[in-house]
Image (cartoon, rainbow, N blue to C red; front, top):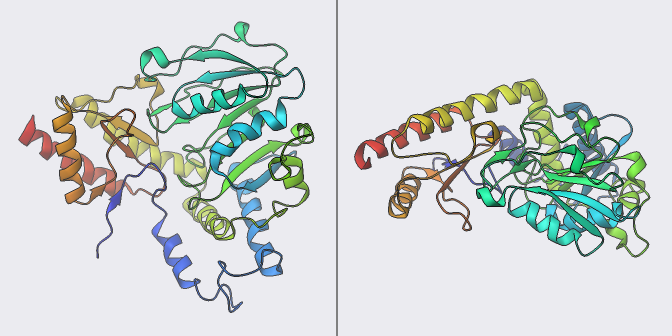
Length: 360
């Protein structure tokens, strides 16, 4: 059976070479006579995998030595609570920018634990842009400043980072992880679920600056305390072994491509193909302010829900799957993560042109 072009927002496509390697090693990893799915996480052979994945992140992202790379579980959603439980212990204040559904959930969760200031929101604009930010309005003694770097549902991304001074910047990068170079030193914490660009669902990666460890509330669950996780090399409890293994293979694949600079060029090419067509189309349009457009999640609509539904149905029949927009907003969404080949976007654009010819 031929593989489809999978535009899912997550779990999403993985590189075919990674899938092939995993299939080859499914029964016997590296001559160990066992699968990664069944080996002890305390074994020397597995330690090579998890430490190799941590080093892979350092090499690919250029992570400074004063940051820890933590492998956790519970998805990005568990860190909505994990962040205030680990950090909201100084002034008990934090600033949040709400730019979509996941930032909203993080903001609501944090309110359980301290004084949370809504620094800005684009809700009135249906989250179609990143709001203007005025550092003069930021809470000067905040324990941290929170953003969602790329908004999967609404297809927006920060064009520039907020200037937070000495206040640690915390960012959910679930859907922009490994899509382009990022200066890790500008953040106190970067975190995200792996199921977009990094690995299968089940792994959450937290990159945290050393000075932010050891600040957690006394009543934090032990497995959520970043210092505990760091002190135990992400193996305080059994880690998501298979997802970490795939993560290591993906990081190796990125290095073979030429690193994140090469990945960024690849992603910009794909995004330009799709956005250029949307901007020229009389049937399809992208609702996002151009300077805030995501490289990873391209949202679009037609002139009616009936046409939207017909497009999604016909596209799926033609091998372009998971193009239906999130249930909260409707329309369509093409998630074009790293593993989506340029040929997939080119083929989608040609299909859209033909659909427009018939329905425009």
